[in-house]
Amino acid sequence: MANLLLPPEERNLTPDQVEALDKRRDLGHTLLVIAGQFTVIATILLLWVGQDLTYSPGWAHPIAYYFALALVLIVVLGVTGIVLRKGTPRID
Image (tube, rainbow, N blue to C red; front, side):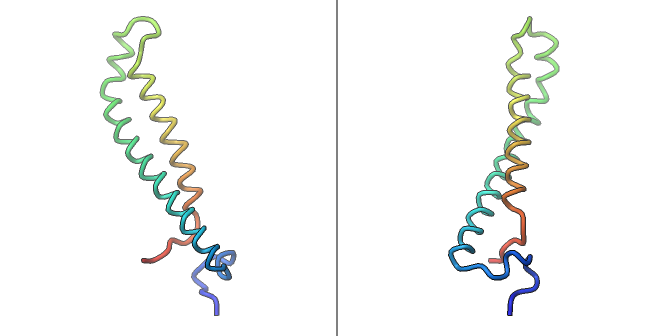
């Protein structure tokens, strides 16, 4: 009998499909961890963004650009990680 705690699409998978599913979820978890690390970096950059935008001349705002890049990476990696991690987590 199939495990009723699993979503219907995961109840009758072959061993190869289960392995592919685990790899997908592991990749999703890795991307979420990387997004979390970029969140820490963005938080630290946030301490200097105001000063950079206030005192840097013209278009020379490197900290603001790094901060914007970090925010984009957080969103892209976070959403991708959440999508790849969907489903019931495996229990080790």
